Length: 585
Image (cartoon, rainbow, N blue to C red):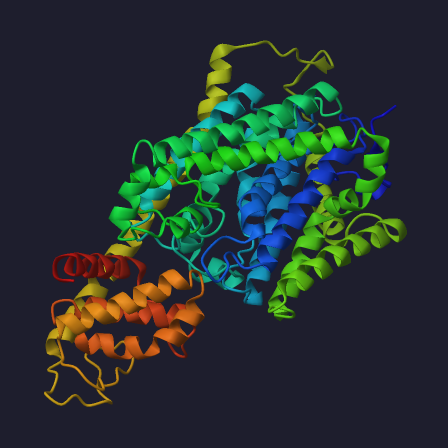
C-alpha cells in the first residue's frame, strides 16, 4: 500500500472517542504534516517582524501571516470530526459523551491559553489558545450537522462575520479593541470584556469569523481522507478558492476604485503598501482588503482556500513513500502541536535572540522537531496532549457510564437507526448554529451597552467638567495638569490653544504611528516631546479629548502608572479630534 500512516501507541488514541462504537483508527500522516506546516508558519510569523524598515512586508508575513492560523483552526475542525467518529458520526448517548469530552477539552485548552497570557509576549504576538477554547465549545452543537449544512455555515460566516466586525469597530464594546492577551484575571474581573475580546477583537483571532475555518475542517473531516481523489479535490478546490478571492479583491480595489476610497477616507493617500498589509476597519470598502488577518471576506476566502490546499497537498505527498519518510519529523511535531506551540510562546516571552529573528526561528524549528522525535520515540504522546486527552477521556467515559442504562434514541431493536434524508431537518441543522450565534451576539451587545452606558456618561462628564474647571494660567505651572490624566509639562515654546502648533504636533504623532505600526513602545519613546506639548497646544474645545488620546498612547506604550481610558469614551474622543482636524488642520 502507498498510503503512509504513523502507527501511534495506545496512549495516542483520542481519549474522547468511544472505543465501543468507533473503530480504532491510526493517525493520518498527511493531517499531522499539515498541522506541522501550520506550526512552523506560526513560529515564523512570531519570530520575524511584520514589515521591513521601508514598510514592505517581510517574507514571513507574505507567506505565512493569516494562512498558518487558518490552517491550525481548519485542522482543529478535522480533529473534532475524528473525535466524533469521522465519516460514521457517533449517535445517541455516544455523541453526548463525546460532547462532554469536547467541552472539557475546550475548558482545559482555554485555561492554558489564559495562563500563557501572563507571559507578557511581544506586542505583535497574540496567543490563539483562548480562542481555540471558545471554538471547541461552539463545535459541540455542530457534531451532528451534515457537511452540506456546515458548508452553508462557512459561507455565512465568511459573508457576515466581517460585516459584524466593521459594524462594531467603533462601537466601543468591552474588550473588542484589547491590545493584550487575556489572562485568568480578565476572566474574573471582566468576563464580558473577555467575551468581546475573543469574539470581536480584530487584532487577535475573532471567533465570529474563525468559526468558518472550524466548520470547514469539520466538514472535511467527514470525508474519506485516505482517498487519493479526495486529496486532489482538496488541493484543486483550495487553490482555486484562494486564487479567486485575490482576483475579486484586485477588481474591487482597482477597477472599481475601492482602494482610492479607503485611502481618501483614512487620510492615507500614497500609503498603499501599508494599507494593504496593515489595515484596520475604516469603511465598507475595507471589506475588499486582502491584508493578512484583516478578516475581510476576501481574506477569509483566500486563507481558507490556502489551508484546504495545504491539507490536500500534505495528504497527497504522504502517499509517496520517500516523501512520507522525509516528512515524518514534521508530522511527529504536528501530532504534539499543543505542546510545541505553548513552548515557542515561552521562548518568545524570554526575549532571547529578539534582535536576530532568523537564528531564533531556526533554533525554534530545529528544537521543536528534535524534541518531538525524541519524546515520541521514548515516551509517546506529547505531554500537554496526554494531559488534555486523559482528563477529557475520564469525563467522556464517566458520561458514557451514567447514560449506559438508558435506551439510546439512535437504536432501533438494538441496531443503529437508519439515517433518512430530510430537507427540513437539514435546514434546521443549518439554522440552529446561526440562531444560537445570533442570540449570543444580541445578548452580548445588550449586556455591553447596559453595563457601560452609565460609566461612559460619567467618564465624559468628568473629563468635560475637569477641563472647564481647569483655569490655565498665562504662565503654565509645569506641575499642574489641565485634567487629571497625568502630569502635563508646560510647553517649552508656543502658545496655549495654538491651532497651527497643535496640527503640526498631531501630524508628527500620526507619522510615527504609520512608521512604527504595532510598536507602541517605540511610538511612545520617540513621540514623548510631542505628547508632552500637544495637550497645551490643543484648543479648549478638544483638549479633554486630546488628553484622553494622549493617555491611551502612554498606556499602550507601557508608561508607568498609566491606565488605558474607557474604550467608549476614547472612541468619542477620537471622533471629536477627527472632526476638528478635518475642519481646522
